[in-house]
Length: 194
Image (tube, rainbow, N blue to C red; front, side):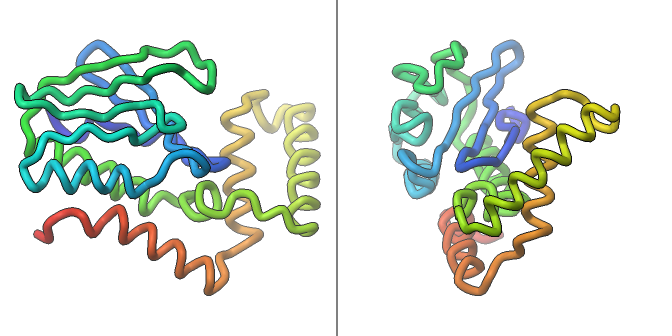
């Protein structure tokens, strides 16, 4: 099993949506900016690298347990679905430690360098008057575009459009760049160089 084990689906409004799959099952889990901590993800990977068999609550509002056992099983178990998505609540994948570490390394890089990691996850809720006005304008743009047949009536595409416009309109300031770098380091510095 390789990097296809993980697919970073979306980074938006304080959530990182991750798809985990084997040949036939798909498990979705969300790392949210309020309840979850990217350090838990880093701790899980660091423990794998040192040869341990970690079990850490990483995602879904501290309700999803990521575990790797002595039989080369990577398991995710969601105690309940806080977002009411009615999704698969457990998945178990047979994989060796090095393949899992490589797949998690790919996921960490995808998150750290996602174009919306800063504006969509770390700083999505600024709430300044300029940002509030921006969201009103973009909402009108989207509605007008849907009416004119320029955009499909699709909430996911609307969110992506809004995210892209927000990044263009509000580039990171120095202070935010420092925080972004800190979180990129949390995600990337757990892996051995090479």
